[in-house]
Image 1 (cartoon, one colour):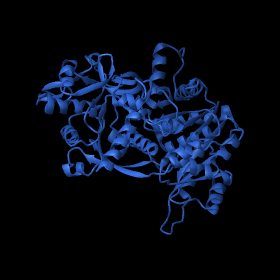
Image 2: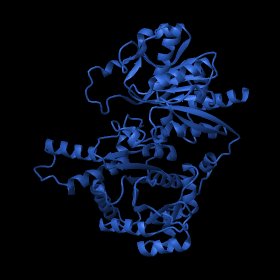
Image 3: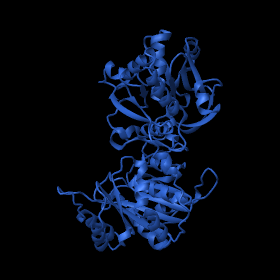
Image 4: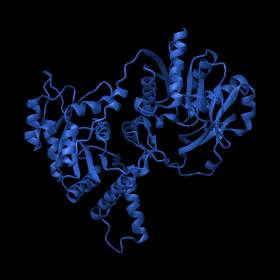
Length: 527
C-alpha cells in the first residue's frame, strides 16, 4: 500500500478536499486503484448532528455513515463507494481507545496520546486502505489521506504526529506528503510566497517535510515564483504545482495534470507512468447546447448544504448537454413571480418546521401550473402533505415531525422510543422496487434499484389507499414503506424518499435527475 497524505496551511477552505480528490482521479486515469480517507479533527463521532448551515452537507455513505462533504467529492471524482471507516474523527478515535481501556485491552498500561491514540489512528487508516475493494473486487494500491483543518491547529496535532510516524515507517517510495497553501496576490497581481513559507515552517516544526507543494491562487504560478518556493521549502521546482481557481471543480485534475502532478507523484511513489486515459476529462468538459433554470427552495442559505444536489444536476446537465442555472430561493421569502420564471422546481431535504409552508406552496404551484418538480426526502413528504390538503381534502394534513393535525407523514415504527439522535435514522443503502410502466422504471431501465436514505419519518400507511385513489401513485416501495411517487398528466412530478444525489457521478448520472433536467428542457422548448 502506498499513501499520499494531503495537508493544508495558511487558512481553511483552500480546497484540500478537491485537491485530494483530484490527485486520486489523476492516479486512476493512469490505471491505478485508489481509495481515500478523510480525517476530521473534531470531537463529534460523525457529522450527523452538526448544523449543515455551519459545516456543510452531511454526506451519507452506503453503510449509513454520516460524513463530511469531502467524502462526497471523493466518491464523485474517483467513482468509488466508501464506508464510515473512511472518515476518521477525533471522537471516533478517542471513543475507541477509551472503550479498549475500560475493557482492559491495554493490560494496565498508562494510556497516552503517544502511543495509544497515534497507534489507533494509524491502525484505522491502514484498515480502511487495505480492506477496501472496488465494485470489481480490486484492492487499492494507493490511499489518499486528507488531514482536515490547518497545520498548527491544536485539534489536528495527534493526527499529524501519526502521519509523521507513518512517513518514517513506510519511507520513500511508499509515502508522499502534499501540502496545500495559499498564494495571495497583491494589488499589482504578484503572488506572495511568505504565507507558504510560514506554513511549511509550521509543518517542519511537527517533524514533517512536504514532498509536493500545491499553491492555490487566482493566477498561474510563474517559474520565478516556483523557484523561490522551492528554494525556501526544500522541494524540487517541478514539485511546486500551480492550482489556480478553475471555472469548474471537475477541471481541477486536468489543471494539476498539466502542471506535472502525475509525473511528480508517480516518481515519488516509484510507480510506472501508466497509460493516460483521458476519457473522464471528455465527459466533464462536454459542451452545452441548451440552458435551463431550476429553483431550489431552500431552508438554509448556504449552497454547501446541498452540494450533492448541485453536482447531480450538473451531471445530468452534462449528459444532456444542458447547462443548469440554479436559483437558490429562500422558502420564507420567494414570490410566485420567482417561480413563474423557472423551468423547474426542486424541493430538497431538511429538518424542522421553518420554511415548510413555503415549500408546500411551491409544490402546489408546480402541480397546478404543470411546472416540472422534483422532491427529495422532506420534499417527497411535503408533496404528500400538499396533495392530502389540496386534493384528498385533509386541510390539516401535516407531518408528525411538525406537530398536531392529520399525520400524512408518521414516525417510522423502529424509531419509536429512540432517544440517542446520532446515527439512529434510517441510513444508507436500501433496495427500492419500482413499479413497471412508471416514469421512474423507464428512467432507471430496471425495476429494482439501490439508493441511499436518511430519514425518521414515512408516509402514513393509513392514508395510502385514499391518496392513490385521487391520482398520486407510489411507484417506489420497500416493503410497507413508500419510496417514490409520481403524478400522471404532468410534465414531471416525481419525488423520492431516498437521496439519489448521493450516488450520482459525472460518468454514472442519477436517473431521476436526468428525467428532471430533460423535462425542464422539453417544457421550455414547448413554450
